[in-house]
Structure formats: structure tokens, C-alpha cells
Length: 135
Image 1 (cartoon, one colour):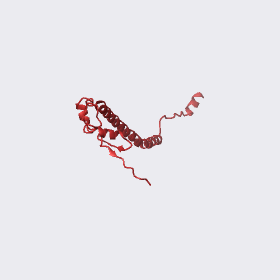
Image 2 (tube, rainbow, N blue to C red; image 1 turned 120 degrees about the vertical axis):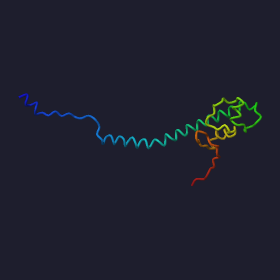
Image 3 (cartoon, rainbow, N blue to C red; image 1 turned 90 degrees about the vertical axis):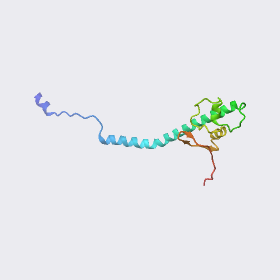
Image 4 (cartoon, rainbow, N blue to C red; image 1 turned 45 degrees about the vertical axis):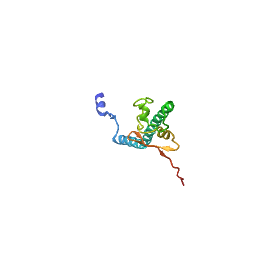
């Protein structure tokens, strides 16, 4: 009798794993979340690049002010001139073109009145912000 009973009871084994619908749903959720956060991450990267440019501009202005008693030129001296005269370490300024003057660096630091872009790894020439009336 015992043999008969064991043959009649079917063993049900549950398969483990995810269904195709569950996998598609998870992928859709991940795609929606990534689409929402990609622009924000891009803005953070741009802001980090601008902060790096501002730090380099501050380094240039500080080096100029430290050596201004030795230099006869006012704010017209360039980064390459400061580097060649030994007031800046060679290769320390990477995000600002060597042709920028100290006055340009001061304008870069004046973020309330001037703006700039990061083009191909270098800061663009600072541009005066024009206040346009908004309606």
C-alpha cells in the first residue's frame, strides 16, 4: 500500500528564476531613472570644470599679486610671462590659455558680472553679462 501511494502523488518542483515580464519591467524602470539623472550629472561635471578654471584663475591672480612689486606691467601681463619669469610653476595652469592676461583672470573670477564656457578643455574669453529685463 505504501508503494501505491508514493506513485500517485506527483512531486511538484517550483522553478526558480525571473520571468521575462519581470526582467523587462526592471529594465524599463532603470531606463527611466537613468534618463532622469543623466542631465543632472552632466550639469555637475560642467560646474566642476568651471570651479577648476576659477581655482586656476585665482592662482594666477595670487601669483601676480605676490610678484607685482617686481613687475612693471599692470594687469596686462600674461600667464606665459608669469610662468617664464618663475612666478608660476610650469604646467600648473592647464585650463586657461597662456595668452590670458591677469585682467582676464580677474574677469573669470568675477562670476556676477562675467561668464565663460569650457571649450575643448580651455576656458573661453570672459563675456560681460547683460541684464535683460524679463517679463
